[in-house]
Image (cartoon, rainbow, N blue to C red; front, side, top):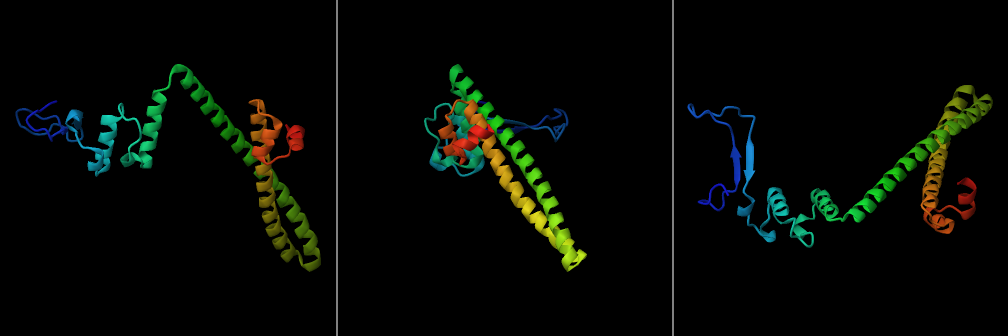
Length: 201
């Protein structure tokens, strides 16, 4: 430690100073030193977020379970990283493979959803315009176009969402089949029928 005379003084903020004038040389540069051996608060003494971070850093290597005082969301990534750091090489490789597969799934789902939504919206828009034009001839061109466009937008959005969900389910099914899952299990998780899975994938 820096100073054994004061056991409670562990948080040091140091600035560069001109030794002759005793003035701070540059006030935008600060060095912060924490004497961790002097931080002796117990879990029930933690009050501020700063206390909790110091406690986590001080005891992370010896904690068997996550303390109740550190259940805020801000600490989740810290404890996740700590768990990963304890993996052996084989476990780490399995974790990285599963993480890659998860990211691939998200990418496939996003692409399928966007494609299905755009396609459904365009088809619905065209159908809406056609219906609106036909109705406009009978009730008046202006009113028909307005109602047709509105209905087209509604039906297009609905159809787009429906096709997007279907494409998303099919994309997941393809990935699950590629990973070796049987079609019956895939059907149970995706709400598709076995026939749809075999026909579309």
